[in-house]
Image 1 (tube, rainbow, N blue to C red):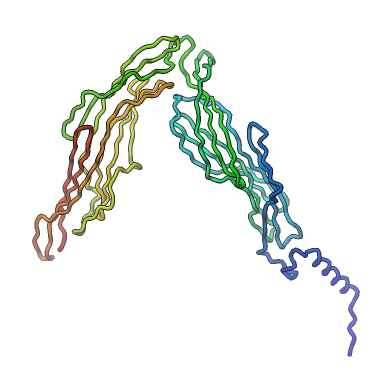
Image 2 (image 1 turned 45 degrees about the vertical axis):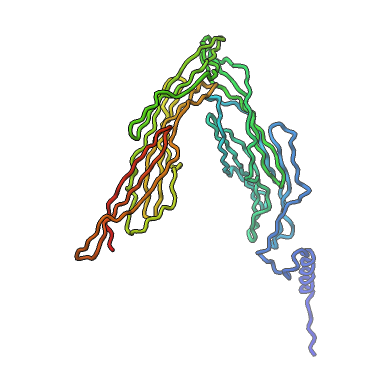
Length: 405
């Protein structure tokens, strides 16, 4: 048998490969060949910290890691997040915030690269929109993405949950402020929300000074009022049109300490129109009503200032009946009003339509035949009734159609 001589160079090379294999022991499952689909990531739980020592915010920090078959060791990065408190002041036209409407959105702001890791700095915005201003909470956080040119993937990162709780607000009076000859009345608005992060709940607080221009220094301006009496008078009706006068009696308080009683009146009405059948397309004898009610998405409101303190709102509402062959629409109109001096808000008594009922019918009227065959003449009728105070308003519309039989 012929002996084969192995060179020392080959022996050295094999030894080097053996040494490389031993240091890659975490990836031995791949038998020395990298599996480019292999990617693992996680968070070191023991590194998570929450620091609320600052009055401005609560800061979070933790360490995220990733493993790829194409690299010999774990990649690691420190990520941060924060729940920021709000401390500001806002000019308002009124001290009545009303109910806040919450919305949430996100924005990517900056990014940085650390070797094979790209960190994106993002912010979650929680906004509460009130009648007189918008309150915005900022919740910044970071996300990490791994890419070594051969293996890539999103690294484990913590984000804020959208299950945010609105804890409500409180209003307290502050002393007035004089700036450049103008007098500003002030109130302190305190609010908080609760957010979830890494399985726990954290609170963000808002301290907002609301400032309203009351007048110039030396003026005798209104600082508030109280309701003494209110009511409705002169209610009349003509067909589907009712009208009346709504009134309130208030005692206004002025900056110099004086008081004055005033009565404010607003002419209001309720009007029901004839149903519109423009969207009915009847092509068969079967008539089925699926649903009926006011379409809130198409409600229209026009506001008009009657004087410095009274604002009237003119509503137009569509009552829609949906059939298997189209829809009918009936327009209802009414008026509401509010007294608002910037400090006190009082609603006027008002009436609106109630107990709305409708009925649609398709009735055969006559029939005949021609060269095309038999046909029938039908009449579709939509009837609508509603109460306005003690009156019942009724209206109907008709549509004649011919159907083949």
